[in-house]
Amino acid sequence: MLFIQLLLQGLQVGAIYALTAAGFALIFGATRVFHFAHGSSFALAGYVFIFAMQAGWPWWLGGLAATLAATLFGIGVFWFVYRPIQRHEGSFFTVFVAAFGVGIVVQNLIGIFAGRGFASVDTSLSRAVEVLPDVFLAQVFWVAISVACLLFAALTLFLTRHNAGVALRALHQNPDLLRAYGLSSTRLSLLAFALGSALAAPAAMVTAMTSGMNEAIGHQVMLISMAATIVGGVGSLRGAALAGLMLGVAESVALNFVDTQWAEAVSFLVLFAFIIFRPSGIFGIAQAR
Amino acid sequence: MIAYLTNLAALAAIFGILAATLNVAVGYAGIFSVAHAVFFGLGAYAGAQIALVLVPDALVAMLVAGLVSGVLSLCLALPALRVRGEYFVAASLGLQMMATTLFSEWKTVTGGIGGLTGIPRPHIFGVEVGTLPLALAALGLILLATAALMRGAFGRTLRSIRDAESAAEALGKNVAAAKALAVAFACAGAGVAGALFALHMQFVNVESFNLDQSVLIMAMVIIGGTGTLLGPLVGAVILLSLPAGLAFLPFIPATEVGAVQQMVYGLAMTLLMIFRPAGLVGDLSRGKSTA
Image 1 (tube, chains in turn brown, cyan):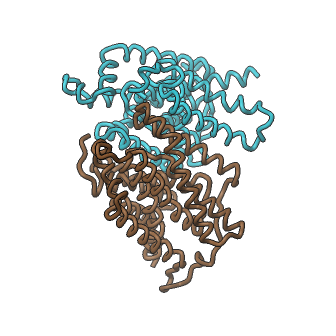
Image 2: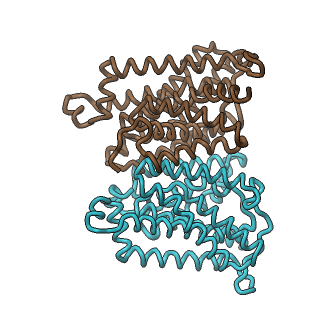
Image 3: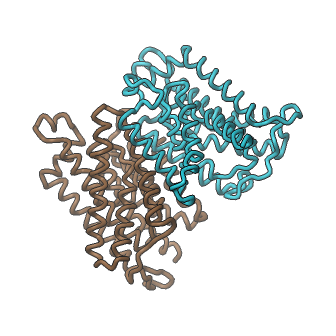
């Protein structure tokens, strides 16, 4: 029974990871920017949601504010940090270091203004009930799973049916050709950052309702998203989402065999193994090294 | 006051070693490791155990620490040979996270979160010595070795790999061996710094060897200037004196000094990357291709 409980727990965590990882993969795939400040979008959205709920806003307004915060932050980082660096042809590492700096600043700003330690939202959704003998499930589990599925369906439709979505995929495959066809790669990159960052908001809200936020959570979320993107195969949203789900489940189920402290290391062990033995990931195309 | 300054100087020398050796990997070989604190930690635990269990001889501790870190640098060289760019950064991040867990959980060797305490003062052949002269001597030696290596054929090979790996390979350079050697040199240096750190602080725990520390060392190299001999030292001194300097500013509440300090260096990293990617000491025209 413990195993089933851990599996369900893992699915819930995995759904959150899948959403953030898909956002990161969308941005990285389309713009080739290693958006290391993605975790900050997540943290900001979570805290905005917590503050909105504490101020007594209705949940949908809080959700809207959180999504807006994440989206604006993503766009802002692209516009004020990544774009100037890319203009003078900075390499990926320049971008990485700058993004890391942004992450540190956001983490400490949250620490100063929202206080350090855990903060969470109290809802009746997170109250667990016994669904099977010895297996407890809160309603938020269904919320997490259905929100993740819904968003993926919408995202897939957008990327395959809508013109802008198709253009985003084209940007990933051949930015020069895209420009030759008269499309603006800057405008599309903005779209990628807006969409990718917005995907982190629902994940942050679910986290705020379940395990709670702390000021360093952006870091952890970022590392997991990055791991999922690489394990899933760069350029494959499906891969990133699946790998995110997998990492969540692996982390949780590992508790059946090892102590809690080792759970986090499991994800990175998987990542490390993939980089050494299969750098192109599950769904990735073999890349020239 | 003198004791305070000596302490600061010794720490500056130790972090100078860390930054200078990381610079060999980042600045010369183009291997962007975010796991330097792992090897710093390995050296520190090795040195501390030598001093605690065997003899408190600084030379033995430093030698063993350098060897342990140098041999285990294979963990980092392996992904460095397989992948490049973002993938390698991700691999080194993974290594860093695994090592942090290992450091805090392998309690028999590392003492866990509580760390190792009561590390004896350093001796050389039975005579007690201060850590400052030791650290300065080690720093000088490592800088000399770096300068000599980088000016010679090995340095040219490394820089050619950094700038155009395929071209270097086409010209018959053994890319794998050169990369592995550069990583081993950098990590062994970090190990030596670790042993010095353990002997200096007389206490080590996992807090000094986590991702934040790796990023701090990385920031020293980047802010100072990659691929230059003096840049990393400048970066180390600036970032180490930052907390001391901020502590004297009256308008920052004492509880927030740590956060403000972190924000200052985060902001410095971001702004420098936007406006001066080659670092403070680096050459601007060359920085574009290297940083």
